[in-house]
Image 1 (tube, helix red, strand yellow):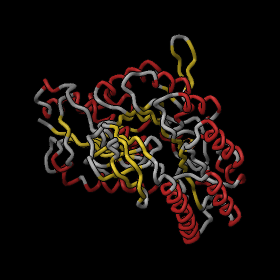
Image 2 (image 1 turned 120 degrees about the horizontal axis):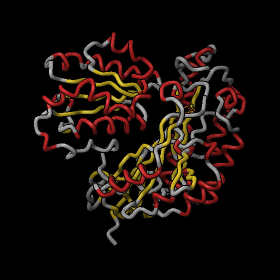
Image 3 (image 1 turned 180 degrees about the vertical axis):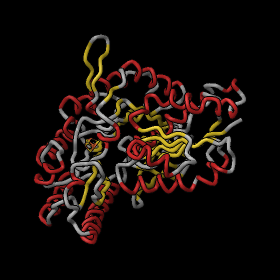
Length: 431
Ligand code: SF4
C-alpha cells in the first residue's frame, strides 16, 4: 500500500495545513509514514511570510527531485502560501512537482487532487478498506493536541505582510463545522485544541440564529465534554477586549496564555506598519488581560530594522518590551516581501545594524524568559504530557521532570525546582 508523508515549513498555520492536506490522501487509502524516503507521496505545506521559510521550501522541493524521479508512480504536491505566490514559476522551475495548490485554493484541495491525481492514487492505495482509517500526526507531535483551523485569510493590510496577498480576505468556518470537528477530535483522543487563524480573534459566525464572536466561540467550545485545554493562535491585539478577557477568565478550559504580537514599540513605526494600535493601547490591552487573568503569560513578536527605524524607535521597542514583560518573544529582522507596500520603500537599515539590534533584542528577551521561568520555582503545575517526561503547563511553559514520565495526553502534577534556558525543570508530584 502507498505511503504518505507531509512536511510543513514555517508558521503554525502552515503546520496545520500540512496535516489537513494529508487527510484526503489518507482517506483515499494511503498510509502515514514518518520517513520521506519511504513515502510514495509527499505533500509540502509552504510558508512565504519570511524569505527564509520560502528559501527552505524551495531548497526542499529541489532536493526531492531524485526521490520523485526514482519512481514514476511517486507523487509530489506543493501547497500553501509560497505555492500561491510562485505558482507558475514553481511548476516551470521544478517540473518534477506533480501538483501546485496555492493557499487560496486550500478549500478546493481535495477536489483538485482528485482531478489531477485520482487515478495515480487508485494505483497506490490498493487497500480500499483502509479508507478513513488514518489521520496525519498532530503538528505538535503530541496526539493529545489537535489543531483546528477556524478561519483563513486576513482583512488587515500591515504594510510589511504578504499574507493578505497570498491567503486573501477573511473566511470563517461555520460554528457548527468547528464544533463538529472539535467533538470528533476529542472523540479520537485529543484533550487540547489549538484554534488557528491568521487573526484568530476577529472570528465571526452564527449559531442558532445569533451572532457569534470569538469570545462566544470560546464559550461554546468550553462546554464540550472531554476538552481539557483550549488555546488559540494568532490573535490580533486590536480584537483583544473586555469581552475576550472575560471569556478567557471564565472558561475552565481556556489557558491563561496569550500571544500579543507587538511588532514595535514606536508609534511612528506602528503607524507605518499599519498595525491599527498605538504602543499605549497595546500595553493597556496587556493590563486588561492581567486584571482579568492574574498570572496570564504573554508572548509577542517584534520586527527590527523596519524601513526608517531610528535608534530612538529601537529604544522605544526595548522599553515597550520591558513594560509588556512577555515570557518569550519571536524577534525577526525585517526583510522586504513582494508585493507588499513596504517592499516599495528603501530597505534602509544596514544588515549589520539589523544584526546588532536583533542581538540586543534577543538578549533582553532571554532575560525576560529567564526571569519568568525562575519566578515559577516552588509552584505546582498541571502538565499535559506530550512525550514521556515532557509536557506543557496551562500557561504554555515547557516542562521536564524527574519521576514517573506519564503517557501522552495524561495530566500530571509537577513541582518546579528550577529551569534550563527555555524549560521548567521539576519533580513529578505524586501526592
Ligand atoms: S494582521 Fe497584519 S501581520 Fe497579521 S496576517 Fe494580517 S496583514 Fe499579516
